[in-house]
Each structure stands twice: as C-alpha cells, then as structure tokens.
Image 1: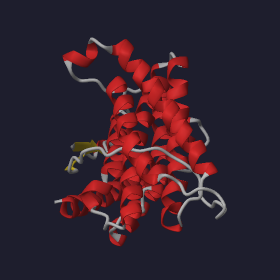
Image 2: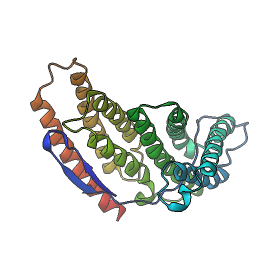
Image 3: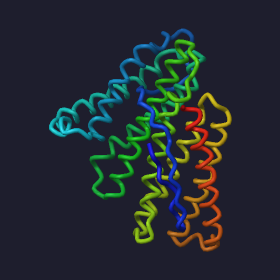
Image 4: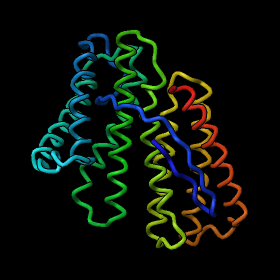
Length: 274
C-alpha cells in the first residue's frame, strides 16, 4: 500500500508500506480457572477467517459481482459479527492457555471496537460519523486478522513472521492516512475535529499493536503513536478554542517529528516485511 500522510503545514510524506494479505479471527478475555474446558483455539482461528472476510466483503466491495449481492453480503456480515460475539463468550467461559492470554486480551479490545462501530454504522447519517465508523471497521478487522495469526502461532508454537503479523499495523496506518488527508486548509472545523478524534483512537490502537516479533519496531511504533497523540490533542484544543497557548511553531515542529518518525518506521517495516 502507498501511504500519503502528514500534510499539515504543507509537509507531505509519501511512503510505501508493504501490503500484507489479511488473516482473520475473533476475540476475548483471559485468566480462566483450570477446571474450565480449554479454549478451542484451532476452531476459532479457522472459523474467524470466514467471518472477517464476510465483514470486509460487505463494507469494502470493489468488484461488479459483489455489488450485485449487497443484501446477501449484509446478511453474511451480520452473521459473522454474531460469530465474533459468540467467540467472546466462548473465550470467557473456557480456560485460556498462558501462551495465549495476552493475545486473547487484545482480542477483546479490538473486537469490542469492531462490534461498536458495526452496530453504530446504520444509525449515523452525518458524513464524518459514517466515515469514522467505516475506518474503525477497516482497521479493526485488520487488527483481528493479526490477532488471529498470533493465536495460531501460540497454539502451534510456531515462530511469528513479521510480514504476516504486520497486517494490523498496515490497516491502522491506512486509516490514519485517510484522516490526515481530511485536514485540508478549507476543511470545516467539525471535519478537522472528527479526523483528529479518529487519529487519537488510531494512535491508541497502534500502541496496542506493539506486540510484534521485532522489539525495535514495537518501540518505534509506540513513539510515533505518542507523537500523533500529542499533535491531535493539541489540534482539538485549538479548534475548540481551548489551546491558545499552542503556537504554530509547535505544530510545525510536531509535523516534522511525525514525518521523521513515520519515515523511519516505514523504512523498517518494509525491510522486515521483505
């Protein structure tokens, strides 16, 4: 994928992050008593590939064929979401092996965000709200794909391959690109507010995504997310008339820092995913 990002104050960065095929999955919580049945990881990993695929087909159809089957695709996506909700309950009821507990805990975060956005989507008519929900659905299905892959690796005691794991990070980065592009010089205040609130959520997601097989990349991911959080937080204050102490120089310096950090992060991602 090619990401055009960080346009604020005229700065522009175009970096190619390697596209990674989606893997799939569901959700849950950790810490179960030993008397409980062991979580059926294999069945969850297998079934969730189909579920995430159904949700993405409905929301991100790009072919003439799927555009003719929207009603059926919506029904399949609804059923897939029900499957994910069932998996959450299953994981709460069953014992989670120690090697899977951290992954399962992250599932719960990613899945709840997906379920919330999916449920809210038909209720919103405001364009910014609709775009925000679609963005969450996009990158949280990507995150769940990454979670699913890690769960499979934990189950089979297989080494994690960076290229397969990084699908979640790539999904979030793409969503961040879309939101930064919305911040044009002519964009109305509500759009700028909406974009930066989305960026805050995406930055938080990136921090949770720092569980990959490369420690340096994880550290850089958290640093970039922290910088984006500061930038978006300050932008929201200014737009709301509460950030009068934040100067244009500070924003310019933050934009430069974001550019530098994203460039370094993207270069390492491309190297590790090669």
